[in-house]
Image (cartoon, rainbow, N blue to C red; front, side, top):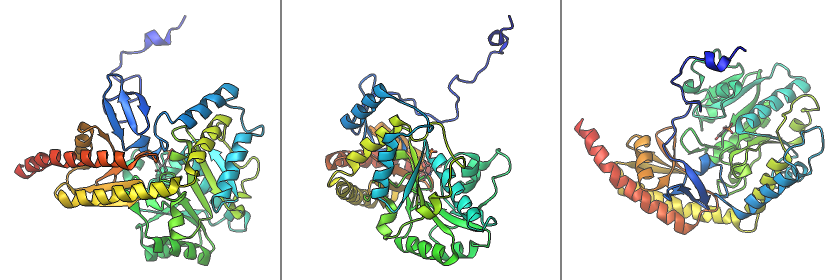
Length: 409
Ligand SMILES: *Cc1c(COP(=O)(O)O)cnc(C)c1O
């Protein structure tokens, strides 16, 4: 018998494809905002799986609902009704600008659905020539072929052939540049109300309001990517609520499933009605299990006082970070962000700051623009924020020798 396994040459590549720079740490379990290794080392998790583990680890309500639903039925496909998805969609509609919701499994897929919905809306309303979407420099919209084009970052596009056509880029927070980029081929605008990967950069609220007015003036669609800043992270359920305006369409993922893969595209009726049967779909999207997880997360986020608590704890953290940057201006130059989506702009390489924080027992995530991203689970307490601030103070002190050695070079 032909044995393909024996024919294979010896390779150097790891069985798990090495497409990430992984930190040499494995967590055996988690408790709230803490992750614990098999040898009982405890880390305070201010990365939350990249702003995804919104209820922290081992949350009793979320894990119970997931376990119960897994025993009943995990997946049935979208050939049938899925009551858990109907419930989750109704609740999202009730608490947002949207009239209708499409479920998928990730942020990139939610954004793909959003861009397809924008193009389809234009095509169905007599403007098939309007297919282009205006995005911002510093954006991140995901890793599919179309979303690396929407992201526009040369680092993510390199080597993958011609970028998918239909995305134009303008500087973030610059209304004039955006208005100047609108052409008769423009279908819509796609922006993050708070840029995440780009370096925790909030859009000015005035800019968001102006984008709404601009979209209306030109008859184009306004799309918000709230994959990272949505689902309570900013201290409101959706970050655009701070500006008092609403988009026509919005993507969600990351925190919406509390760590269980779930994405969503929320749309007003004038957009959503064009995704008729057969026009778009996904096998896994909106499964009983994923939507049970989403409903469990919503139970917690929509409980009275929960969002107000995020805002309060986030402000406490913010003041601590501002004070930290004032104490160590040669390490941290400023604090940025909103709610529990905060970052420290670093004067040293952010990777150095991240490793120093790790050495202090604090997990964080690097972001663009040399920012150290701090995105704890939304259940974080003020006491835990104080622990993180003490760890960050020690981190800054650890980084001072790095600075001296940099100066010596
Ligand atoms: C993470 C992220 C995405 C991509 O989400 P995936 O689930 O990794 O596909 C898209 N947009 C924003 C704003 C994100 O932060």
